[in-house]
Length: 274
Image (cartoon, rainbow, N blue to C red):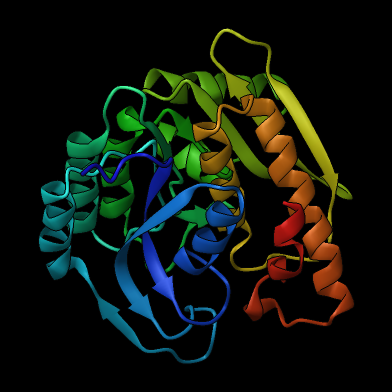
């Protein structure tokens, strides 16, 4: 009996009980788009690290045994989505997972969650950031913000890169492996831009009006929509428009409800319209 009659995506990320990020975002979003979401939890948080305190347990020591059971079931995935990774050991495990489960037709989406505003996140070391480059060759789709794109390519960070500079940055990322790249969350006055690159095509700039400040989980919503759309055959640029407009709509409602920034975005109200 085969377990592979329905489209499914393996999502490798941490599990966060409160705060709307990581796997607790990917599970409902990918499911609402009609694709089975199969989580691989790299760690478990009571709530994310943006809160004053949190409980945390590392799942690294369990991952190999967890993944081995999937191999016994002969699971095949239409997509693999990787997110935040907390250690060099986890990068190695993810690389082995991609080697094992990325077959012909499997679309790998790598979200290299490492930093923002020109700096690494406090939990990231330069050594770990350097090791993250090892995942780029497996990626069909890469979704860095500008900081992460600069880190991966060892490019000096400037917040106001023009279209030509962004194109060169994407071409350098493409040389590492991925054919489709979106540099997300570029500040453009009152708007946010997503710069869309696809090998062999002209780049596309997609702008949405900026709604409020940074909130946890928006990147997870974004990458989850892209992954689900990709395995369904949606055009890449159309998928970025889809994700961008959905997030903007949800952010407007989130502000209306006065939801604290730590609590993410209220996407639940819009899952039936995604």
